Structure formats: structure tokens, C-alpha cells
Amino acid sequence: MPLLSIGSPAMKTTAHHPVRRATAAPRSARPIDADPAPPAGPPERCWTALLEAGRNGTLCVRQGAQVAAVRTAAGCLLVPAAGDTVLCFGTAPGDIWVLSVLERCAGTQERVLRCSGDTRLVVEGGQLALEADQLHLASHRLGVRAATATVSLDSTEFIGERVRMIAGTVKLVGSLLSTVVDRVNHFSQHYLRTTKGLDRVNAAHIECDATELLHLRGEHALINGAKLVKTRGAQIHFG
Image (spheres, helix red, strand yellow):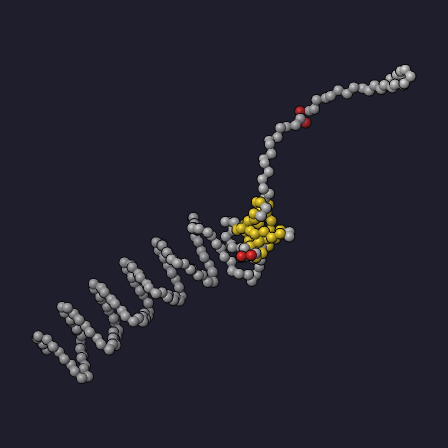
């Protein structure tokens, strides 16, 4: 029970309460020293946005009332265009990257895959197939190297200013060979030709020149000259 004491003229009251002893906190409740927090860096976030055409052909995205220019990441092979829905990544205010193109509106320009610098496509342990209704190759210089090549075409048209072919063996097999040229130059060590049917030459002037021997042989030999038949030699033998 509290005690009440009364003193001299001024009344004084003193109250006594039980004393509470401090108890030790349980070990589980004691604070644990945490690792220091890393320093705060620039804000990083990803979001989707609609690309807009800016000045001088640049691409921009709208953030509220502001318009910020964007840069294309190296992993985004499809070239972004105005009107595309893209995935953006911001590392700092005003520093926005386009990671990928999510959707392209129908009717926009063609899709272009672009890489900067030397690029090499490598397929290990498999095959690479390209399929398209139309396939175009445009290059200043084209090189193809393979141990074996097979080309199967229904119709082929080749147009070139100069053609040079070097091969150990060339073989052409077909039902019809037609050539139209202004001039034909042929040089060979040996020239052998076999024709089972008709071998006919039509020309304004035919000249055969043999340095050693000219041999014409047949079961029947006919020489017709409308105006003149002339034979000249040191010796002429008939029969």
C-alpha cells in the first residue's frame, strides 16, 4: 500500500511504487550486425513504349510530357522503326536503350536485321536452312567455298559482263546447246569431235590451214564449184 506523509504547513504527499528490475532481452531478440548497404546507383527499369520519329531521323519515346531519344542495343538485331512497340531499359535519366522490338504494325516498312562490324554465323552439329518465296543476295564481292556443291534449278538465267572458269574437268550433258556470240576463239592441244548425224557448216568463207597434213576421207566425196574448181600443187595424183 502507498504511504501518505503529511509535513509542516505545506502538505507533502509521497507515493511509493514497486521498483521494476530490468530484464535481459532474449538472445533471439538481440540486434544482428547487418552488412553495410551498397551505395545507391542510377535507377534501372524496364518498360514498354511506342517509338516515335524525332528530328534528324532519330527515334524517341514519350515519358509523360517529355520526349527522350533512344539508342538500339547490340542484341536488338531487328532495326526499330517509328510505330513499333519496343522493350526499353533505362540506366540513367535520358539514357534509354531499346532491347527488342515486341510488335510491328502491319503495313510498315520491311523488317531489317542489322549488325555492325564483322559478323559470323556459326551452326555446330546441325544444318542451316533458308526458306523464302524470293531470296536476293547483294554484295560487292561474293565468295563460296565447299567440298561438294549441288545446284538444282528449273530455270536459270545468268547475266554478267565477264565470266572466267578454271577447272580440271568440265562436262556438259544436255539435249540442246545453243550459243550466240560475236566471236569464238578456241585453243587446244588436241580437238576430237564425233557427230553421228549431220555436221553442217554455213559460212561466207571457209578456210582450213594445216601445217603438215590435210586428210579428207569418205565413202563418197563431192566437190561442187558453181564457177571454178581449182587444184594446185607440186604433184597432183588422181586414181
